[in-house]
Length: 117
Length: 452
Image (cartoon, rainbow over all chains, first blue to last red; front, side, top):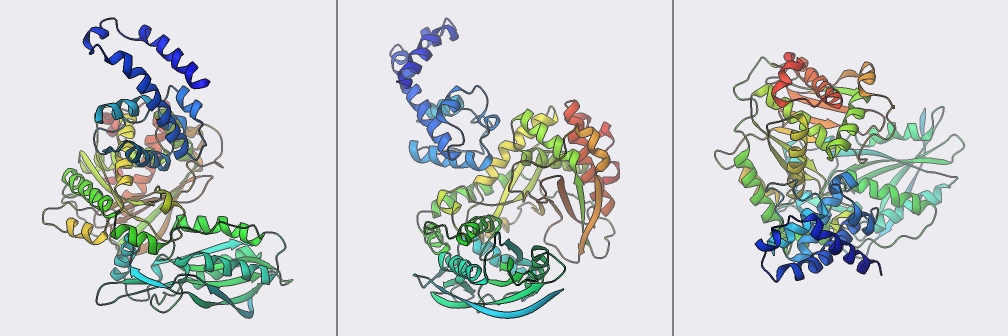
């Protein structure tokens, strides 16, 4: 039951957070598809983060956090495991040598996956 | 007093008898041993496994036998052949084990002495098993510890931690799942689907070397000491406290805090804007490698363009660069050497190695870092005629204080400068706890005058 609830909450809240003019900039069909897809990816990434920490961090905890993964307690080894898992799952190459530090939160990772696919 | 009271032999049996080329991790050690004289014990690891509870000799020997049965790496020999070096796993054999008795000292203390003795002579890699072992008993004849020496070909620090965890289980008779991944499997992986990963690492090295300065110390040369290479140590609870506070504040690891301070101070000292350090990388994030008893350590390349701003900015940039360095440390060492040896490649003789297996210093004293600086001490930690590095900063394993060691080539950096550098790392980070230090203002701290 939990995922559905969360989905509803995040969709309900989103319009308030977005700048007013944004819907005009985006393609018309996107807003209806993206939040659902994004929310699914977000949960899946949170699961991979949890697995990378051997379950030390729980999925809900990761979903709720508003800080970086490092601040949340994802150590270097777990982070590297996560990057490997993301590459495998999403068939992307993640280049840590590129302006990095930008992949240290759930939102940044989801955005990055959205941009590279 | 340690007296020999007998000898035993431990039989072992394994399912697989096979030979293969070396894994990349083994090749990396192989190359380093070629650099030393034959029989040099430098890559031997002395080690002690405590025997908890009241266990008899038979139980201890049977647990040791189980370790040998379980891990192919502990029954492997390494040999040079016309086609290159190979690893050979033995299926059946026995390990001679001495039994010694410690009087007036605890078996565990005595075991450290015995282990150091066992590790003092080089292994014959082609003919000898990669470990030597003595059981150390108390004066009542009860086993208190196992003293070991292992070659770095067979294990690294991570593998020792795996063995220590298994040892506790084996002594109590707790069943363990069979290990699924051995160096033979790793070698096959590296020759097969893992090759792409190695190629990707080397692409990173190529790109990172392009960003590294040609030399770290430039023209800087001075009359060296004899022996030329000296190691200075520091123990600082203040630094431990400061690094933990700053790591939490800046959302980076304590390793990244230490490496950032090192890079920033090296930049300040040498006038370089880009600092390259080779890291000693564990290479254990892959799930298969994670459970493998073997050696996986290889060099990683960390290159930091020191940013504008404050020490915090340098730490964040260093953390990101460190991740890239860790990620690209798994490759064919021969190809990496060929790349490094290309004309015009930079001098990469500066190293950083964080040996700790815990993220912080859980047993450090509480209190504000500035109040702990009075406890800091520095000391000499050895001298060598020849070392393949100009600058080697490493941590120690203590959990109550930050141990830092700096080995330098005194033709580049004097002993006094090395000590000043360690102190400067402490001062920079302790100061950063109370105020964010601008990178342009580090000179004003007056902390590294002696290093010039």
